[in-house]
Length: 472
Image 1 (tube, one colour):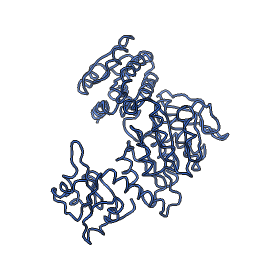
Image 2 (image 1 turned 30 degrees about the vertical axis):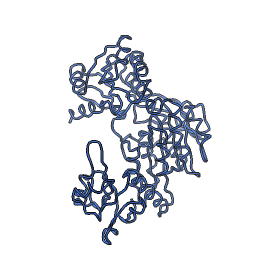
Image 3 (image 1 turned 90 degrees about the vertical axis):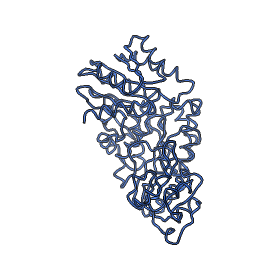
Image 4 (image 1 turned 180 degrees about the horizontal axis):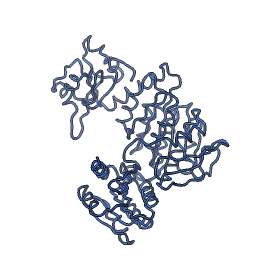
């Protein structure tokens, strides 16, 4: 964040700030929404959540070194002991945070770093992995902001933008959407110089009401790209390919299938004995071999997208191949493969939709060839009226791939469990993480391969954390 003052921030957010001469000039060098993150010089954004009201910790944050407090509830912040002349009041702190982030992004663009670029990434699958790959591929450009994890909403994205400073060369922003209009808002905070749309899949159907609305929402990243920017699209996804007509400027494609060879494309896609993807990367007559450190051939699309961005910014095919082969996805619970007491665990538990669930099961079947395979699957959330049929389809996929055992975890998985059982799979139903862990302790043997997969809200990631903690 480029250093500013409380008074300047109050002006940006049009906030109520009964400042003193002293407090108006206080410097702000960072923003925090958790008082435990305060180290000195931050603006503390007090958010009243469902479980915790940040206003209760306003005075604690100031004592820890925060410069001021941004809140919608002045009375609550003052009740915590925060002085009035250190409090900026707004109608909505999260919207105000977006305004601060936009102002800072504009300030970075006007700074001494002439090569500053914002990269925006969206898609129903692959956003976080692509962002992680870009963090490695673009490091050669200079200081880069691409934090591990998924900070892709109206709170997380501004916080990521606010990590940029005068020397930042590249800001990689993951942009998520569960409603039409989300990406319009996020691109209004930081319009990308290069936008990437990976895929339109059957995710958040309950919120969007159909896959065509998913496509419409993702296309907002395209229309939100800077007029002199570049749009990177997946040629193999017809809904993504159709977004080219919406682009304000240059469009480039990548293609896993190799159907389109005018952009970046792949051939010779395979997996090594550990399930990690290998392929040949092509662009403009050049080719180089890539060996990813990522399990599953579905990651080839993410790698091609990242390479396309890097090439647009000046990297060679050889450079991209080398960096992709060295890159690692730093964000947790995304095809993270590790061993526990002789059992190989495939932890892909961060989130799930029908497409990513099938990809995970395919990876399990491949890695587990000749071994016993066990899928621990939680509910795929936000599928709306399609939920029962989509879960049933996954149950059939479990059987079709020859998975030996299915542990169906929690609510909403009844049709999946029944479909797999009717197809001859050994199925176990468990109510919660504790039951799942006890069952795994009884079932698994040395040499087994276990997949952990489910939507974030299903809690499968907690089982992954518990199993990993057991090894420490």
